[in-house]
Image (tube, rainbow, N blue to C red; front, top):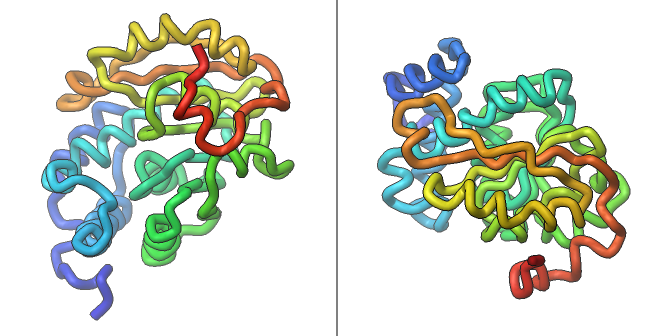
Length: 252
């Protein structure tokens, strides 16, 4: 029995996910619910030997992992209704990138993850879920952003756990094409202040902060806000700076 088959009830239930998805305008099919169940089974198995997510997040995965990721869907549909390419920078256990692929299968998704073991999980999980159009890259964002096939080329950029907002902007906007959208989930208590403080940083990197949104999903709106950034022009060639510098010396 493979890890993805280890729970005969995989996909059963997930009532919190189904209800929250409806609030976000996503009617999950039975097949999607079953895939989310398999995702949770695989995530649980790998987390026992690899620190993919915290114990608390895993215990409340429907809300903290799945619904927090799903909350980006209304923004993508509004800002980028014809989106074809999405990159998730610092994808970790696949949040939000792999969740968004399950919900928006038409997207071609790149999952960028610097830790090779986590990247291995992402490749394994995408295969177990039978997903096509998923490219897992085990690279640092600072290096990947200088590749011609990745730089200034994505309709949507997401980044959930890269650190302070100036770091997210420096590492994320370089991947976003002009006219594209970067969406950065942040803690609700600091998101508005962070966004206001980063107006000049975004402009330096070729972006414009459009606003901060609270997802209309029970259990998510109280915890998460989404900073939405429009890419208005090419990111200057000197950004992102060399590996490690964006985190050590955030732009201000």
